[in-house]
Length: 147
Image (cartoon, rainbow, N blue to C red; front, top):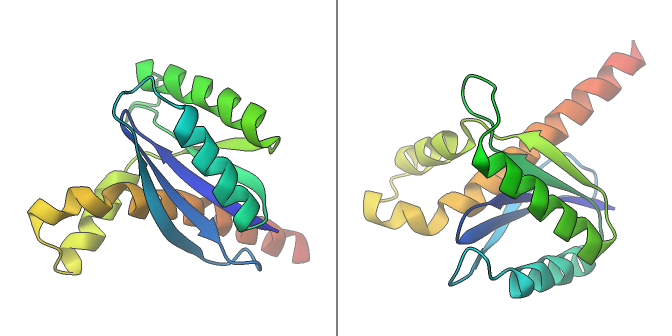
C-alpha cells in the first residue's frame, strides 16, 4: 500500500506518492483545471492515480493561516476532501501544510530553477513536502512505540 499526497489549489492540484515502504515521497504531476469549480476531471485523475499506485490513504494539505486560524481556503479544502473520499472510497487525512509552498520555492531556488519556471513545479513539490511530513510523523510515531 502507498499513500498519496495532494496540494489543493484554486486551479491546480499537486500530486505525490509514497514508496511502498512509506519512507519517501515522490512528486508525480500537477492536475490543472480551467476554473476553480470544475473538479470532475481532477477527481477522475486522482482516482486513476490512486488505482495505478495502489494507494490506501490520501494526505491532503490543509492551508491553515500562520496564526493557526482557518480561513476560506480551509473550507474549500474540507469540501474537496469530502469529494475525494466519495470518489475514491479512501480515507483522506488533512495535514497542516503551512510553509510547504515556501519550502518548495526554497528547494527550487537551491536547485537553480529559474524564477519564471518555478510556478510550473511548485504544486507537485509542495505535495511531496506535505506527504513527506506525514510519512516522517508516522516513522516518529512507530519509533516511539519501539522504545
